[in-house]
Length: 121
Image 1 (cartoon, rainbow, N blue to C red):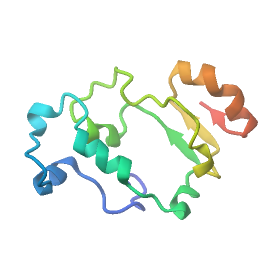
Image 2: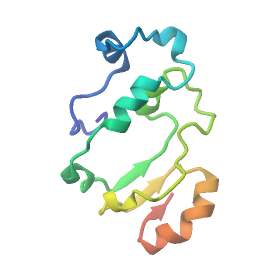
Image 3: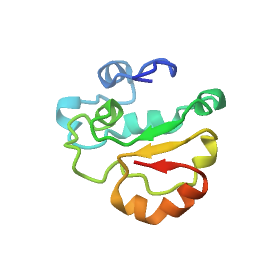
């Protein structure tokens, strides 16, 4: 969505809140936590299998733009966006590498990921 620009439309939190009619969302006030409606948008986002098949690497770098769309003033220090499961890996048939993963995740899933030939950086 942000780097390769293949998942469109590109989501921008400021545009979303202007168009959102369910309630007034004030990013400057609410952006110090996850904005539920923004999270809901991404939870409901359907990514076509053809795009999922193009994913070869997942990076959970705290500087990724997506985090600041959901939690605009996130400091990158909390575990808010830590991945807690590998249950959906089958959706990414060509995944080869995962980087910037939390230590706890690596400890828990390293063996299973290596069995799937997924490299951890």
